[in-house]
Image: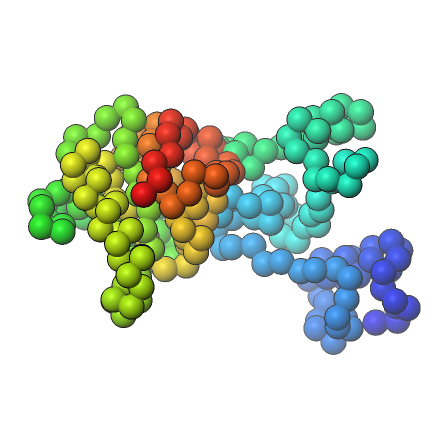
Length: 250
């Protein structure tokens, strides 16, 4: 409140300070505005390997109030700066660079959000396999169906727990599920079924830090990822001690 248009750097700075204050209340701000608030996922970069979660993780690690400010850096031609560009930018301005994977790697040395609670042999799509059940910090249960021996480069498929009605009415999704399971049964691998609230974008690793922790707990470090597209980037996966050898489009 008390701003003019709110678009000036000075007024944006005031708005950011107000948003970051633990004593602020909604009535302190007018809407709409020029600062766009984001909410980090509980669990930070171990759940979602995004910049939002990374900024909050840094605050918590520093013992500060968990409220950060993030922005994109543009090049002189107006396009988005990439990793090589940011390296040059940091050298020019004497800045340090921290990658999301650095945060994930550090946190995994200090903490884990999952634990295995059960193991058994079950029938899965008509064939026996080993089932390992994990719980996370929310109490959600996640299932890893292991087909055949695990190798140095293991086939992995992530899938969201989907309501029966959605699978019945979405033929493409059901067909994709069947193809993935058949591939793993024939070629060995792990089908990881994640309980709701993690992967919302076709099983991207960006959204499934929990899944990455499950993979690592199984002793797997290199994966062949079964995915709907080969053009996705997987931010921060190295921090989980994992690497993708191949993307297999199913």
